[in-house]
Amino acid sequence: MFVLSSKNPAEPGAYAVENQKGENVLFFFEEEDDADRYAMLLMADEDRSLSVVEIEEGLAIRTCKMYNYRYAVIKPEDIVIPPKLNDNFSED
Image 1 (cartoon, rainbow, N blue to C red):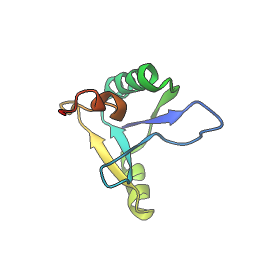
Image 2: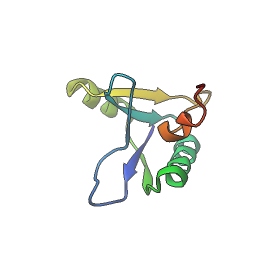
Image 3: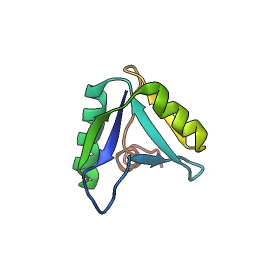
Image 4: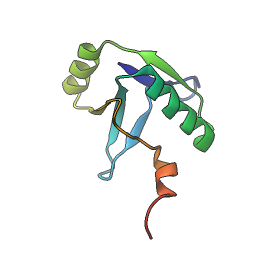
């Protein structure tokens, strides 16, 4: 599995998305290519510099459960769009 991590020392940690309830959700990507694509979309939209880091699946999920962190496993068939880009597609 792969997670996005900030390259900026002033903003350390894994990238998380805020859900509709205002909770932060970590994205765990099953495929490195999907994580790379999402990082490129974020860089284009938010000018964020992120690294794709491989993590051990079981440990990551156990850690999230232990600390009550929200997470989502992004499978190859899933389509995820960064929040700001997603706003551009909303129906108003």
